[in-house]
Image 1 (cartoon, rainbow, N blue to C red):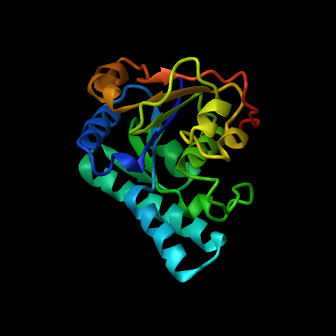
Image 2 (image 1 turned 30 degrees about the horizontal axis):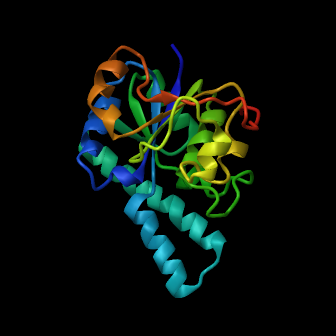
Image 3 (image 1 turned 180 degrees about the horizontal axis):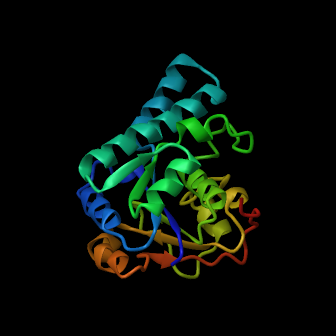
Length: 212
């Protein structure tokens, strides 16, 4: 059964779909790891950087810590989920049949191959994690519906659906799916039958990194 990484966008934090998505992901029969977005917590980092003038390096670390914060919100919503900080935590959780929520700060902040830049958001970090744990699929859950089956990475990046660093972080050969609010209602049924919701994206036009 293929392993998936699922990024739950922080933009869902203030919408009703968040709890629907969390319940669906927690009940998945497909082995998956949830990556939290930064959402309103990362927005606070952006605003604070404008006011205080600290470096992008500091902002990068703080934005990843914002993902940890939203991760705790996700964990608080469903007792079937478990926190994971490291690769070993993730592997142990999956081996035990649990759904891990990745709290990325301990692993991602010191990682030398992750650029300290606003070009790298939680989408890119989810792609990076997918390569690190040899996932076969990546699902990005967003509040936008501005994507289609014929889209490619370049077009999605140009429209701001994906961040500027995403293409360079995406592992080669992975299946990429995007989901919007309209996919939330049917997600539980799909995940309990080991299928991913959302729209599969064309990858032919995107440069991809080697997994691992």
